[in-house]
Amino acid sequence: MYCSVMLWYIINILNPCSFWQTGFLRKKRMVMQHEAPQTVRFHMKDKSGNSVGSDLPSQPEKRKVHIVTGSILDATEKLGAAVPFDNARVLIVSADSHEGFHGLIINKRLSWDALKNLDSSLEPIKLAPLFYGGPVVVQGYHLVSLSRAALEGYTQVIPDLYYGNIIATRRVIAGMRAGEQSAEDLWFFLGYAGWGYSQLFDELSEGAWHVSAGAIRHLDWPES
Image 1 (cartoon, rainbow, N blue to C red):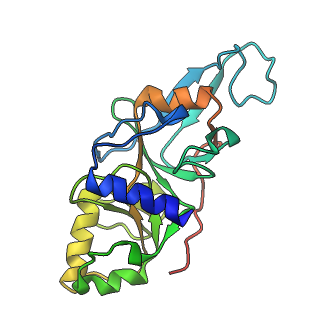
Image 2: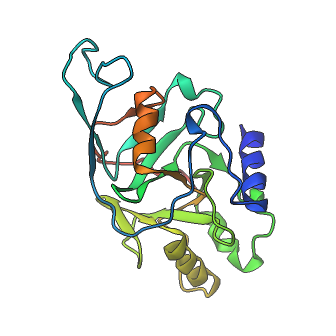
């Protein structure tokens, strides 16, 4: 698993615009960061006419699927060979009907040693956990983050949990470099996952993901 993640890291860092996917992810495109997460609602049916995720597959009526900021996506067996989403658990950190969805893979931990060029002045950052967040990175802006405190530029995901996009996270890292910000209550991610608005629903209709019933109430914080 670690080798697969590192392969994705090398590909994305060296050529961040050359993301490639197969199967369900072949149409995935990089989306821009945005500040205002919103609830997105969508009616859909799978190709057989059955309601996706319904307890009664033969039920003819459509089932309303809610994907909100704070929803959890769990990869199904259909994504078993689709690195890096194999066995992935994804927290949706922003949802917008125009700009799509952003999410963070929350179950693929990395060592800080993966960042070979980490500035020595940022040694304190290693006190925070680092996870592989997804295949989307922007050149020069590799990290995003979650915080248990409402920091400047961070948006609420669920109560007492906030998301910092590449800009907000860069500001926090600058504060660490200046000795003005600690790593306490921070969780860093290398990259993030992004979907166009209809793209994620296409993947759902193909059975690629299970979706939580609304936003989660609590997220377990990893040990440092």
